[in-house]
Length: 130
Image (tube, rainbow, N blue to C red; front, side):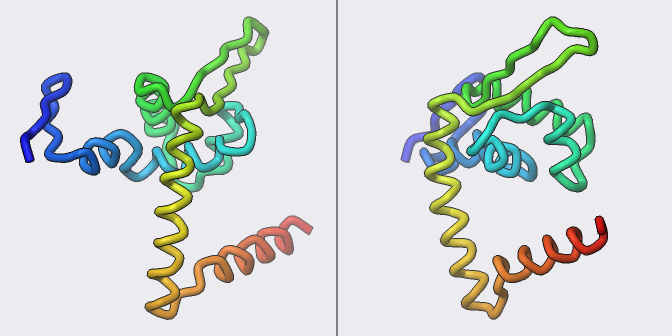
C-alpha cells in the first residue's frame, strides 16, 4: 500500500488514518458523550474522569478542526460554550459503536463483564450521593 501524506503527516492505510483522527485517549470518550445531546464544556469536564482541562480543550479543538464536533459560543456573562456532533461526528459514532461492541465481546471472552462492572459502579455512586 502506498503511504499517504496529509499536512506533513504520514498515514500508512485508511485504518491508520481514521484511528489518528478519532483514536487516542480522549477523543472517543468525548464523541461518545456527544452522541445523544449537546454538552457544555464544564459538563464534559465533570463527566469525564481523569481528563485535565488542557487535554479536554485540546481534544475539543482537534475534533472541531477535523469536523467531528461543532462549537457554539453564546455572548452571555458568564460566557456559555456548547459542543455537539456534526454529521461527520454522527458517522464516527457508528464506527465507535461497532468497536465498542467488539471490545465488549473480547472482554467477555476473557471473563470480564464490563457492562456489569459499569452498573455496579453507577449503583455505588448513587449510594454515595444519598
